[in-house]
Length: 222
Image (cartoon, rainbow, N blue to C red; front, top):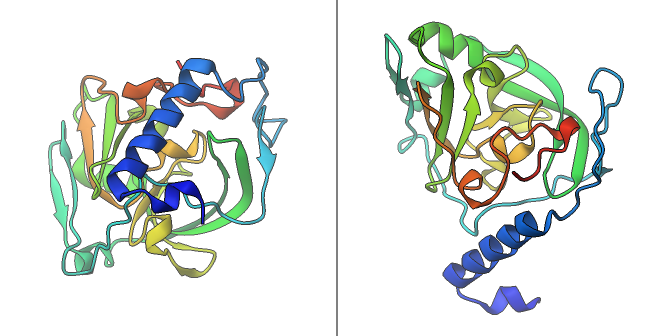
């Protein structure tokens, strides 16, 4: 048992946040190099792993089908609010993509199943002036991405990983997957997809992490 395991949950959370804020101030893990995603599969400063590390803010909400709700709203013409059984009726897609975590690990060839972001965007029809997306999670976490990064063929809301139901510790029942960005941008336990006109930095972006988060440009902090 480590020292952190003896701390109350709130203090563990505060310690984790303080540590990662210090990493941002120090520029931890930065190599000062860039890579080309068309040529280099592994972004600069990353190392490959075979397992899937579990990272969160100290809580893992258990979202039952009865409690599940997914809202896609904001600067859209047709806001949408889905129960779990309604979500399951949507057209499904399967994709294989890599994970690149800002804490330096990468994992290749993750097989996801879920609903494509473009399917949801087509249903709600974003207004012409919409430029950004804020992702809201059941644990209160938020993160922001550009609409152009969310509106891509490899982005989806996933409920399955490698042929199995997505587990709660990895964001189940539903998480976002945005392979082109560091994985903190792929919110776990997603509750709301808010389309916005103005940018609004999320939890880690307000604490020293980069607003965009491109792994090949090593946009860890900024």
